[in-house]
Length: 390
Image (cartoon, rainbow, N blue to C red; front, top):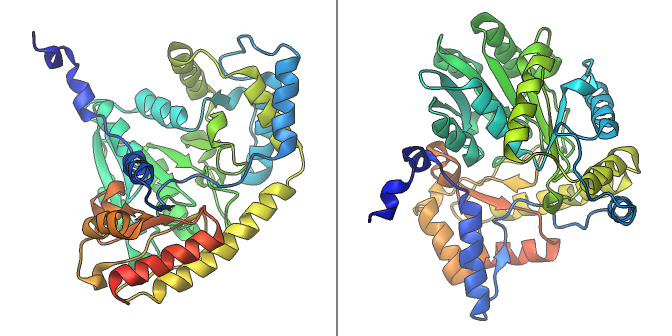
């Protein structure tokens, strides 16, 4: 019997994340005794702050090991609503908040709830690869919005205008941005808001890196006139509080849509563990100094890595305004980014990602995470220099 024939056809439309594939190759090299510097995985290299860990431990010891409401603990939803209201300048009710195991379910649920066969979803390219993957899985048509170096990797409002059609159901934006670190400016967001109201589409605003910003301010499209009713905000605790393994995210949506996101949650994961949510409550309500120290250290690393990359032959690198990634242009080396990524890992022991892991408009670029120690980052630059013959 052909077992593969039993697989639903839609599974062929579902992609993956190259970062985990490169990580597996890097781990295999390390198992052979090779030294590898990991710049491929996007997670803070800091410990979760102690007061957050303690809140979870206390909850567990207190017996918080049972089901919780599908939309999240009322206390956490209220704290999130208060935080989002304060930081985005819009009124948010706790009923608009949906707590999920990480930020990806909000991405998945929003696309499944709004996109279908015959509709189009515009997404950033280069961008987080799961956007396109889930759009295809939902049966909708993915429409890439190019992010070009000449615009600082923010989208060109004119290009967005040309891509929008009456079939556009959803536009996805991500600021600060993975993989480039770009922050979308006011003019581009104003045009996005104008188009959303003209054509009637929704916006999924992925703001998971909002607190990790070095230059200027981070604006949410939800804060523009008329957009709170047309925007789903995706955010969470993974990046800001170094809680990637805790799997705690949330979405903020208009009440009618939030109800459907909760229905999808019930059908998918039932609920988020209570002790994890107690940790999230401690993160929001507790001291923010650990976040500030982490961002300050990321800034120090960013400055060193950008300077180092720009000193390499055939490489140029813009300074990212947020997140913890750099996206250097490597076309001047005369080699493809894919060839460089393979060679850097296999021969130099530096694990990076080719820009095409984030879409076809990432061709000619590498993505490096600077969520590693400054010592390792400087060593990685030197290994790259030797590999490139500089």
